[in-house]
Image (cartoon, rainbow, N blue to C red; front, top):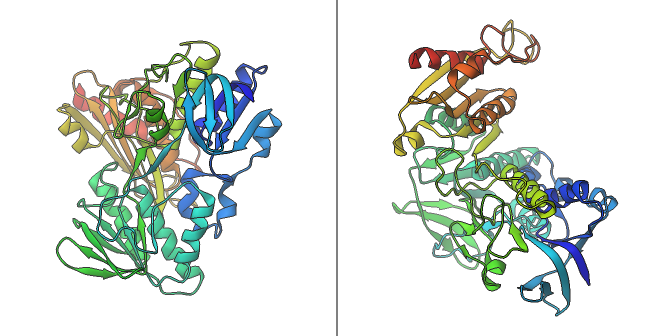
Length: 452
């Protein structure tokens, strides 16, 4: 068995790399190996439990990749024989490669809580069979506790509450978050408060500034004991407190890697082995703003890195990463929030002197048109020394996500307040704010005035 390019890992980075390779090197044989039956859409996992109602509605179809000539194998990889340039499967079979891409992704962080191994305690894994087990446990559950108030935790809590409402069940859903507010690592505090209000409207209880101390019960979970001694009843628990790079295979074959940062790669996604690249959650990253190591792990970053790695497999060092940018968005209840780059706290912690530009305005013109959000707001952060944008936060309707993508592009292109203020944007009464008060333009202008 042999293939020109072997990709280990079948999620965002691996799939994007395979497609990019087929565009740029049609003649190459490509084999993608994954250890799950199907690949779930990573960001869609929470919505399995509420809006979609079943795991099978959240799978990436294989046929489109197969039609492009990409071979997909469901196998477990035991090792990489770098000397012989062979992938070793658990059954002893081997697959030789010309070039290898490791895109093994990440695994949920499991805290060392007493009782963590009790029944009905789940993480959020990218494995359809496992996600079905979670669904089966959540359906009858009356009291569900979600540990972690980041994006996964908040979205899981919302969808589990919706799952109960759709079934006519009165589920009690509680989120336990150690920080003062949910989503606080990514979003501005006042935006976090807006999302918390939406969660409360759904009947979800928030325990912020709280830390889980123990999972109590017999063989099955019965509750979560907080650090202050309070016990929250629970017959199902979701752990959603982050992910760590899946580096086991890389370490086993002798590649430089560490549990916190991932497999060591350069800006071309190249490991120290000239025939092995790594991309996605398993690979090391640096911030595109500060240049420091970054723990950001997102499907959007993984797709970018997969494309970069694939291009460099065809033409060595032809593309390089600009670094990881945290660009996030979510919608809870009737409110959307989106963020890119640094928060005011993160910028302050980095010692960056900055100015802010803020605007609150309707997202339609006039503001009484259908779909109007009268108080859509934006906050932009610009360095005082050179005027470049380093962060942006948007709260309002569905357009928040697309608006933050403008900010994300601006950060990566090192645009200044002056440049963002005078750029030309598409507007329409039924779709956007007025050209007189388009949020990005006006917030940038407000900051430019301060900078001047």
